[in-house]
Length: 392
Image 1 (cartoon, rainbow, N blue to C red):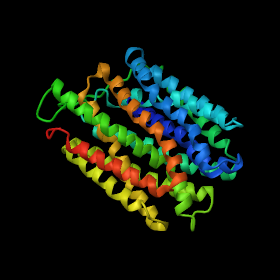
Image 2: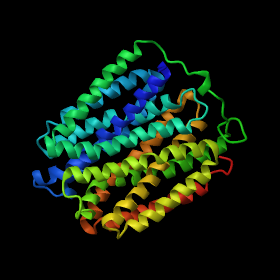
Image 3: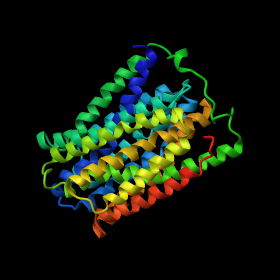
Image 4: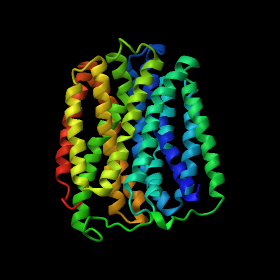
């Protein structure tokens, strides 16, 4: 394996660990802590809000440091920091203490998207497939968060759900630092094929940049709400709607794992499509699928709910590479990490509201109301996709 491929593997593992660490609490809260601490699910989940705010708020600082100092160095801080903070969260004894731990996880987790994604696309001509592969690893982190957390809760206890991933992250961070001692990584000529930022043109004009980035930020904001709501709430949705055949933490986590894993591979198809066809029409198709499937999920139950959930998670995960490919094509290397940071600030600033939204809607009207809101958000994303320039 070349050093370039090894670096890509480390970046992919980092994406997996990033999303895994951020979603451990979702399964722990749904399947154990609410009952153990004599709280309702709706009372407990807002303690994760500070971590989600930090996930977005610290992205710009992380991107700036990556551009101005060292992207490799920032990845070292990421691996060791998220590992230590995840491990420490396992010692929490109160909701406030676990909230503080989740805040620390969010601070270090914020490093990955602006810095890691800038490294993934650096020097590459066609970025759709690499971003898609990297996205699959991230979504496997989402899937493993539900499965591994459920298994560890049943076999060892909820604290192990934080201890084990934390220790793994620290170990990967030490291996990354040893890898960096081998010197700089050069991009092979075979992957450095030039590709214009906008089809049929060279550098995009200022007007095109403003137009495209306005749409990116609009769809990113709503996409962040959709992504966070679906990934965080799915274990509890399955606990309620699959109760006839998913009675334990391991079983609920298993169904969530299957859903997230199947959905992750949608990114490969979308990555190939955006490398070979108009991003605009790919985006329109993905957003339309989301709107239709969220509508179908409003009153679904049992196995029907499971299969619809697989479908809408395919569409939710399939959207992720689209905006990242647009940013990779439209930006220059020297400010690319900050561009990714701006995108993820928008994503997770809105996503941070998702937990309170879930708690409020679930308490007042149940998950039916949540899926109504998600269907409306997907319809708005569809409108934004239609407004992309035709030549993009």
